Image (cartoon, rainbow, N blue to C red; front, side):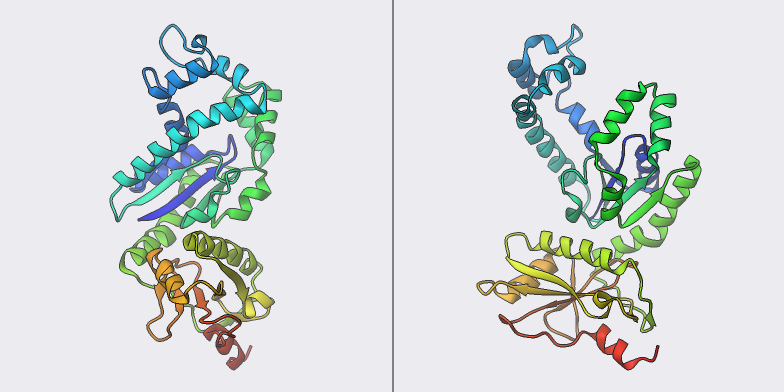
Length: 327
């Protein structure tokens, strides 16, 4: 299962991107929809909120009066914590149920407004960010949604900044213009990257770089940072250091493959690291033990797992190719 994270600031147009991904065949798990579902009329979640914040947060129609809840839940850190203690487990449980219901070969999109704020990016195979300038979002919120300008500005300021969202983006979708242009970008990412990555993941096909020296490319460091975060997430409780190494780390011309060293803690068996990464979808190199590769057609990776404390790793193929090739 290929799992994508989709996010964007309020008013960015994330719902347009989500709808297009659904039309193309993705399974959408919408965090906002789940948050409403777990407190709908008659739900245990709504009963717990009423018990905590007062029965009068429930309207005559049996639905949650969100304005009344907000007046009580956001007056202090303690009240907000009480709200989160009720809703977060319910949201997490329902989210897990929906992921479990998806087919093993599905492309699942987790539509998550607070993906960056929650530090969730490393848990996805790819992160898509709908990127829209703040002034454009403000205009949409005020003119199209009818929010007071002060309220719209306050909501924007409470979220992650544009720079923070761009830092986690594997795919940046520009929505400063027309919706059709955004849909076209989504279709391009789907055809050229997402579906190919899903097929590679399903069949265990590694992506190898072209044997050509290029660059240096400015995006290498950010791509390595995101890849390292995913490796740490995949390792879970296995303690290991992950470091970007080789020519792409040095910022010199190189074969276009990001090399990463994984150095397990002394008490961690390196073979267990390889096993854990293989279970997460990384593909063992057929010619070199303790070397794995990745399935993203847009970002070849070479991951080398150290086999002993302090043991220097063999020079990566990318570094060797760079040394042997005239620039």
